[in-house]
Image 1 (tube, rainbow, N blue to C red):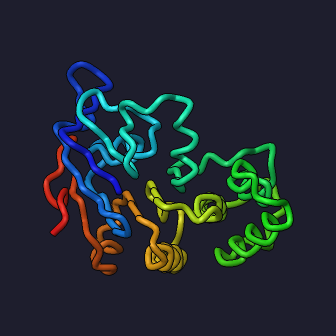
Image 2 (cartoon, rainbow, N blue to C red; image 1 turned 90 degrees about the vertical axis):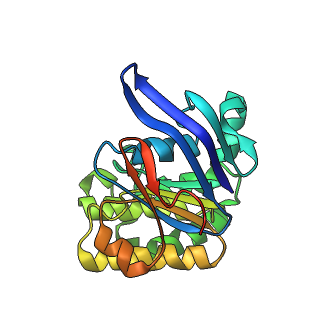
Image 3 (cartoon, rainbow, N blue to C red; image 1 turned 45 degrees about the vertical axis):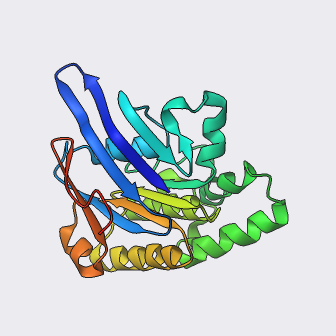
Amino acid sequence: MIQLFHVSKWYQKDVPALQDTNLHVPKGDFVFITGPSGAGKSTLLKLIFADERPTSGQVLVHGRNIARLPAAKIPVLRREIGVVFQDFKLLPNRNVFENVALALEVLGIPRRDIGRRVWLMLKRLGIHHKMRANPLTLSGGEQQRVAIARALVNEPLILIADEPTGSLDAEASRRIMEIFTDVNARGTTVVVATHNLEMVHSLGKRMIQLEGGRILRGGTTP
């Protein structure tokens, strides 16, 4: 499902974000990416959903080579990937319902189905009572749940999350991980970047450890 072959990414001449990285995430896997700030976690996620191109090496996602993917084909790839960004990226000119619905509108889903699916996802995440609110009026934790709802509502093949519980308390974090686990059990490949090692160890999922742009452990399947 996700494969990296000798991938390096350089933003500055003397500062590599990733160095000679090899990674294999099979379809249906659930993996955590851990490591200190600056280890390369966010860069790795950006390469997977084609927000960045590798400086060298190959990134294959669902059979597509990101390095060679024409710009016109990137939106097609992203329709198969749900992304939870660290800074949410909610649209301030749309309310909560509209932010989540947008992920289905781009797929051409009928309006009646959009309404049902969005409401059910917001209810599942405990934020349905705020569906007409402007996202900027919500707390950080509420905005995070809206971002997660938007990532999951189109039932993606791959879910990528960058610090998805960073703005949530312990109980809310546990609920989010339960939802991610349930989504994974239904066949979605889940990749989560996090600093929360306690959460990682409690779930017993595969862990990929990054440091200094290199994978120290977990890059290949056991």
